[in-house]
Length: 548
Image (cartoon, one colour):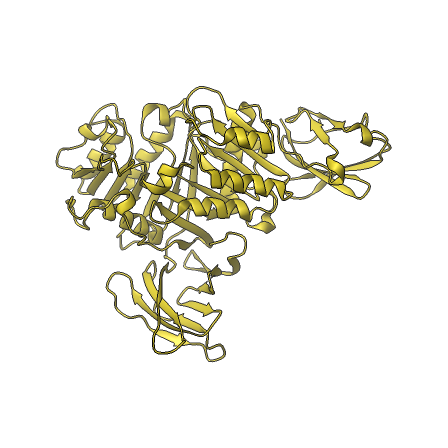
């Protein structure tokens, strides 16, 4: 699914407090329109079509549109139902059917909560301040566990708890004690301090340690996936392992919790593929990990009126989604990821920058393996744009943002556990979310801005089109005065600077007879993020300024 061209929000309606959206998603050769009570698929060519419940294989009711015979509508979709469908070109008796799966909209709230364990620059918020939980990120996870009512499925790479009665282990044991069905998958190659602290009666399964397998690198929890109350299922995921340094620091991490029954069912399906069964006890004979797994879940979800992509590694092609998100950018790209060793991702970033995308910024960790692509990115894009975090701990995020500063261009964030490496793509168990929501992107940007500044990054400024003549604004962030540093050929040029706040209101405009000693003053402006446009002749230059 290509983030910019594959979907358009058409209509949202409110029903019993739940937002239902009519959303059209473009797939390869057809579009899918999600409605409250039905799902329509419009194909580019004349096809034969059939649909089934993905679990029972019971055939679904399908009608053909009277005005467009290429449109098939599933009229009996149940909330959060997974529907398998098949289609083939009507090219004679011999038909080769393509198979895909979709998820009907749930009756859930679609609430999404993002958490960080390090400072964030809330003055840059366009919609909603990000949440820095600091060393209390585990307390938030414990709160979700304490609210769990029926089922708790955990897939965790590495974990710690101070005791069996306190911390995360204590919360899990308490949930089990009050009757919650608890199942735990953990990485078999990692010494997780928490696992022995769990009640011995809680069933657990370690991932394999064979040479053909990587690691069970997930950090997700599925709460109450099968509840009759659609407002109870949650998914917790992100980059955060449950160790002291990962939660309390100094490692830098994020977590995201999403209230949606359809997404919870997808994560439950992934869990049970590793578990080998759908019941309490695991089946080691049927369990599948890493390269042995299949692509068996939908990848597009409509959650609270927003389109969310969901991909599990290595079966679902998560690396291709990273590339798609990069290619979708029209305005800006910001990246916080621990490492990048995928040459195809590196080349995509460089090609996107060379195509004229002026704002490409990234912060990486310093503890990257040999063979990383950061030196090549620094050479191609700039050492002050591709920076490495050298502070305490590990910069452990794995997220990318596109078009945070262009609400009309589908702001998107890709996040999860998936490092940008060959192992993550081909051997590890991982999960990735692609969220099309400016409010969520805005919160991740506030975290990025802090890390980027700590690493000495220079906020991206687009060069003038004419012969790459440089124009730079400094200092950034600023406490008031902003100065121009211009190419000498621009010294005598007349110009105009216009400053806008995050809601698009113009707060300042000044004309200059030359750019050599030009400046403007934001001392009287509230702290926050501002957009600056400088016009010199026929050329336009844009930048972001933080008033600290």
